[in-house]
Length: 460
Image (cartoon, rainbow, N blue to C red; front, side, top):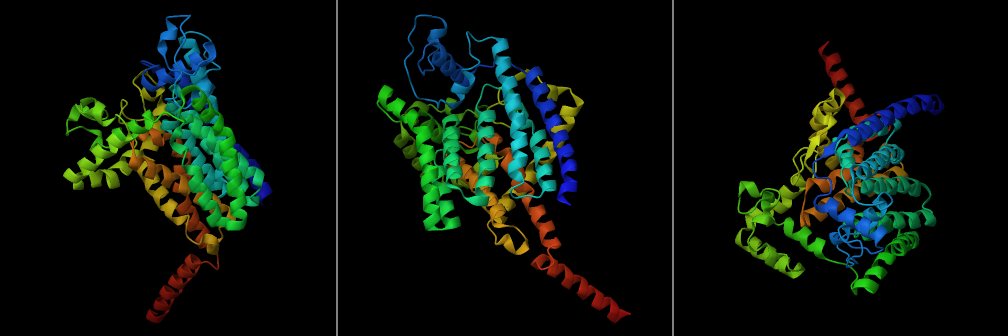
């Protein structure tokens, strides 16, 4: 029966991939970002430029005007993404260079859709995995992100690779697979540091899942893979700067997240950039202790307001559809042209995904919880449970992290494949329970039918 389904699956997957590629390539080709190298994007470009042409990891922009200038090295941003785009930065910035970067990201994003299906198949049926893959392929956030010189596309790709390897890992629990997972986690951390604490949580999960004896060995391989891949960055920082890392972004992460509803003193114009309106911003962001001290003061003065923001406001903000610091919707930086403004297929897919957004996020929340139930009774095997729980752990980790810091919705974009996968877990489990003749759901349905049949016979 499975062999008969294979051609149909391949055809459906092929259609999804073609549509995904069309959306991504067209968007990357036709979207015009008003100022493509602004803010974070400008930093990433300068790191790549100085790394390739000056052989120094620095975001100092003076080297663009002074050919003999020697930039000062720093470690404000992780090197993963700048190293990736450095292959395209063969000179001063121009439209052609930026176009090559965004088109390469469109290709990577399409490959991400394929690997999403492969890892979703490790805990969903083929039908439900294909349905989730379709949502990933149509996601405006994953499509629009390719048009920016930002980390979203590359980070999402590596996270999905981790999900795919985890699916393979759950079947055999080989040591070499644990090592690869550790290396991929390190690569993802080098692209975006927010993942840096997850290997510890994942290691605890491994021990919980397989026990101390085998879990200890697997954990050791995960940590070893992570250290071997991540340590060159630490060594470079120690040798060049005398410190292991620069905590500037961490301080900003905590600082920018302390303002309820992203506003300062309820000033409407400050939404998204409250720290620009705060006269004490430079004092607060001096170091980590200053931020924590200010946060403590604010909680003591207005505990209710800040508790609501941290417990309810931040999770809702983090998983919201609209960006806060950008121009809204799925756009991070302002654009003067996009196929989402005029193309019927783009507009239809946008409306479709927008309507599904909060239902999908809500279902994903229940999927996160249900993954930890003893689902083997309804037919879920141990490998499927392992992968679903690992993904659940990843989403909980990022939610908790951004409750502590800044919950800008942009940071949740790379997690969309995992959200859509877990969103379809509850309906898949319901179908699985009903199909299992010995499962509790099936028995309950049978008892219900028997009860009503008995009532009907008694009336007749």
